[in-house]
Image (cartoon, rainbow, N blue to C red; front, side):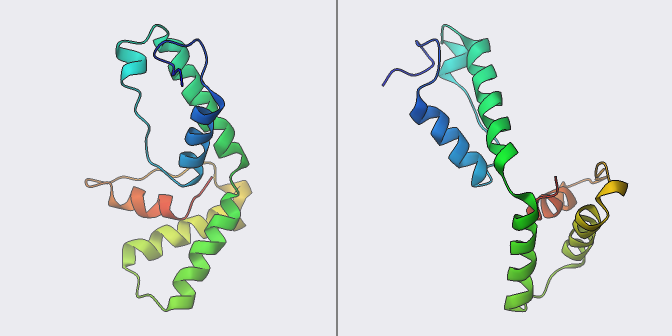
Length: 122
């Protein structure tokens, strides 16, 4: 299997791995050999970004939000105040979508942003 270290384009298996990881909710990707010693570092980065964007384009964010909401409700999980705030923000985004363009999280630790992303707002 020739990777983007020496090839001009990714193989289907590599694109499938990127898509699967994106849909599974990974937080980041890292290209090491492709960009450090590969012959096409810019193209490798471009292919990665395009594959991520296409996978995110088919993800059903609204259903993911409903699933998380139902899971928490169904198990009777006691949630922290920060989780309640983030869930409420996402509810507003999904139910009042014409009024919400973006979330801005002012944080020292990043905790509110992580909780907010758990609910998959667009």
